[in-house]
Picture: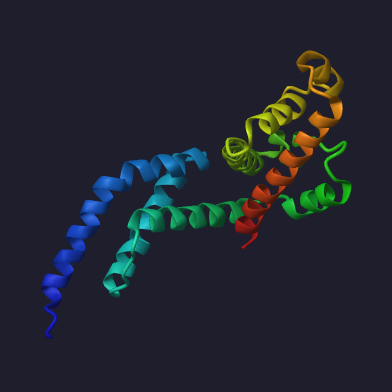
Length: 193
């Protein structure tokens, strides 16, 4: 079977144009939510499409183009974050893992927002991922975590208000923290490749 390179290139161009038109805006919004600078988001989007073009040009078959593009975008975002990181999240995770969840609040895991644009960026990325992870928690665990960590309410106060035993609240928060720790570990691993 003889392959006509001109027809193959035309088909690849058609597929690429169709993909950019169909997925471009959604993919840009996905990136923009995770990257504070519009210019950086545009660069990442362009890099994703360049990588897609390169893969199509060498005859790589991509089964699910949309999923592939989001995976590449996540990797590019992690690469950008890695370049801009000013402090080691590894030290924070070691502290978190060695101390456990007691006495270590959410703000202890986040970079100081006053430490400059890179720290603000890191904080936004982590908070974005934390928000997504919170939505995956069972409602009881999410409620306890948000009330205690974000609203800074005591377990005693929550127990009195809700009628839920203190130990049950502590247990629910512990499960939430364990889950969130794993999710943030995935983010950390992505950032530290």
